[in-house]
Image (cartoon, rainbow, N blue to C red):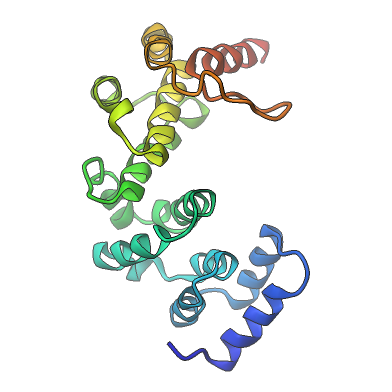
Length: 215
């Protein structure tokens, strides 16, 4: 794709100095919504232009076919960038429209591991701030118990995080979620930075429940 002068100028701006997420958001505020420009920036194939592209996409144009293409492109990034891009897309686009929310809710068994990650991460996000009014919790936990260790690493993290959110907020499922962590041993040896909560479910749930009890 041939870049327009505007896309070239924006890319040059991104390349100047150290790019931060705040810088990208400021640029996006100036541009607002411009899907054609977003696709030009996306075609550059680099991490920061693609992050900016996500911010200025038109969510009404993100149907299953378009998302499949974006996911295929994201899959070519290294793991950290890959996860950041797909989560960024969910937070800034896919979770903002009923049509794309319905798509995410259909992706548990998608052929794309990134879409499966979004299915689970969205389920976790639904439970943030103690929202426990969901009828599929039992189903989700059974699926996690049966499939967690079979999944790709990026999907495992989101499944594990969903179990963590359930265990944090719903006492009736707490021991079951802790047992998932003990049985799988997933993230048991993870080293995290100071003031960060580990992903190992027994530790995660214990720390997060203690925070709730202090409130």
